[in-house]
Amino acid sequence: MPDNSSLIHFEGATIFNGEAPVIHGLDMDIAPGDFAYLIGKVGSGKTSIIRTITAENPLLEGEGSVCGYNLRTIREKDIPRLRRSLGVVFQDFQLLMDRKVQDNLEFVLRSTEWKDRNAIQDRIDEVLGSVGMATKIHKMPYQLSGGEQQRIAIARALLNKPSLILADEPTGNLDKDTASDIMELLRGINAAGTAILMVTHNRELLDSHPGRVFLCENEKCVEQL
Image (cartoon, rainbow, N blue to C red; front, side):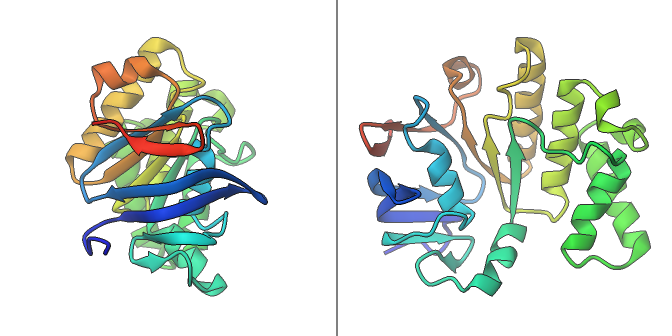
């Protein structure tokens, strides 16, 4: 039976990429405050697990729940609510390049049913301050470095105060020093109580920033103890 406190729970789950199963028998529990890594070679199923967690890929076999939503029975209309309970950070930032930082973040809040203008501005100011980007609010994304863009992307992920952040190769496009800075930022967010599940191929990060580790290989994903 799943632990009711689990943010992510899989039991005997088969993870698909399209119609092809890529992971068999997945067992995973991520609790509030956890910091966990998904590691493995390209094509080993890491991103397919993330897409299953966000209900982009359906869960057809086994049991799974995310933030209280049953992935086997979730209704189409509830998927946006599930996704609002998560924050997602991507390798390529996925900022709207034709909009200022302010407008990137405001777009997310208005898309998630924030209406009060003052509350919107206060939340934008708060998250930008938390990632050290308060002075960049009127910049366009192309005016920022890669590390700054990733900080804005992390601020975006924090907007709706998620209990869980999914980070898919968040340091993959960054140099070593900038990657270290982003990891320090993520660890600080984690220390404040937000659970993080991070996909990475960079094993050096596991040594410098220890956490739980799930290894994807040979169509399995098993925690390394």
